[in-house]
Amino acid sequence: MTDRRRALPSVDRLLRTAAVAALGADQPRTVLVGAIRRAVDEAREQPQTAPLDDAGWAAAVARALADATTPTLRPCINATGVVIHTNLGRAPLAEAAIEAIAGAARGYGTLEYDVERGQRGSRHVHCADLLTELTGAEDAMVVNNAASALLLALATAAEGGNVVVSRGELIEIGGGFRIPEIMEKSGARLVEVGTTNRTRLSDYERALGEGALGRRGLPRSGGRTARRAPAVARKTSPPERTAILKVHRSNFAMIGFTEEASLEDLVVLARKRKKPVLYDLGGGLMVDLSDVGLTGEPTLREAVRTGATAVVASGDKLLGGPQAGLLIGGASFVKRCRAHPLARAVRADKLTLAGLAATLAIYRDPARARREIPVLRMLTADRAELGERARALAAQLPASAGAEVVETQAAVGGGAFPGTELASAGVAIPSPEPGALAERLRRRASPVVGIVGRRRVTLDVRTVRPGEEAEIVRALAQALG
Ligand SMILES: *Cc1c(COP(=O)(O)O)cnc(C)c1O
Image (cartoon, rainbow, N blue to C red; front, side, top):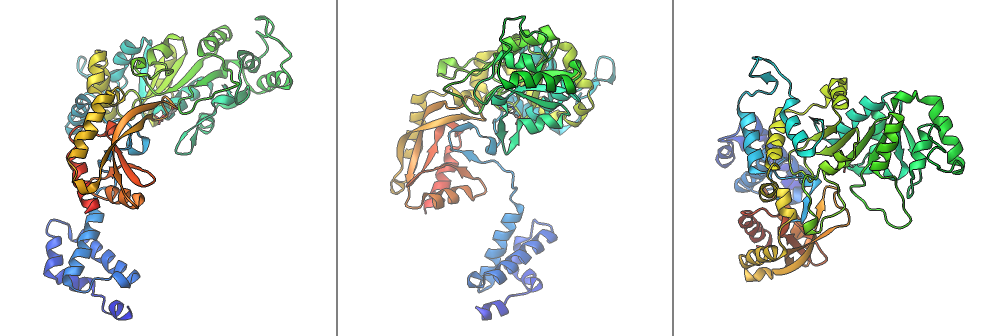
């Protein structure tokens, strides 16, 4: 070992080696030198695997070069069956959206330019008309993501004041981000009401002050909370800066001894007290999917119809568009949001706006939306057709792979329709070391991400896009061969 280490070549000597120099033909010299350094460093750290000759060194440098030049963010094949897979980039886009984004990226555009007047325009016009047309809202704006839409709506409604929210809705939305922490960054103080499993309308009424208590015939004696909450609210909140927030439980379900105030009831209460109600819906569903068994998630139109001051949702979950945050609701409130200083900090870029507008335009024809928006197509895919695709994929694999067509349980993902499983189909590859097989499928220029089972790796075809099968076959041939 020591001998090998002592014999490590210098970077200069390797650079002069024909096979190594050839690798750098279409790379900047600095990149080649960096790769050589890494190959030599690696040999120093792991002398037992150090290359022994020039051919070995060329192979080691080629690997280091491939590592350095393969983008960390690159397309991969989602064979997990999780349709809105946050780690894999959530929604794949419709062709029309991809074209719109490419068009916006290539040259200049009318992002903030009014062609009729030949003057500066506003980026907020691009999706607003489509959003109001499709949801029935008075006005709408688009920002970077739903978290920033929530931040902006809260800051506009209750900065320096209070925001009343149920303890059952203080959720974590993934990646360690928690709604209460986002809320506090808006400058609004959280007033938690109710308990984890039960929150009543009267809990909100008390937190808003005692005005309506008794008038609606609600009991005044709700225990300790009843006496404490109004005192807190009175001390710290000027009444005009208080808002109610309702958060849709999008990524978990609560069952058993539960109770919550409906958004409709909260809207009635808030109107009486002249307070805004914000609704964080999350998913952004635009069409009813109950015919495929996906129920319990309100559409954006339904959420708007309740009369909430503003509804907040993501563009890249059930809506199936690019990452974006939708803030839709009453005209005067949305106008105030646009004018808030935070609006500039969270504004959407031209690529997002182009992709979102093109996606929204598809929804004008709901049947077309189901055909052309990949998220909807995957969610509504027919089980028999999925079985057929799994069989076709298995048939392309060598018999030695031992592939088996299996029934699987796919999921909506993205924290939408929690607990709903979609009967799906896949190809299972038996393996004594499924973790190692899955890793070989993953660690390639074109990664294939599957499901690691007890003694097999399963590839669910629901989320495999048509045309990706050939790459899966190649990946399996390499991984098993
Ligand atoms: C997903 C989600 C968010 C965050 O949405 P992003 O677009 O990822 O910022 C916020 N609230 C709810 C209820 C969600 O489901």
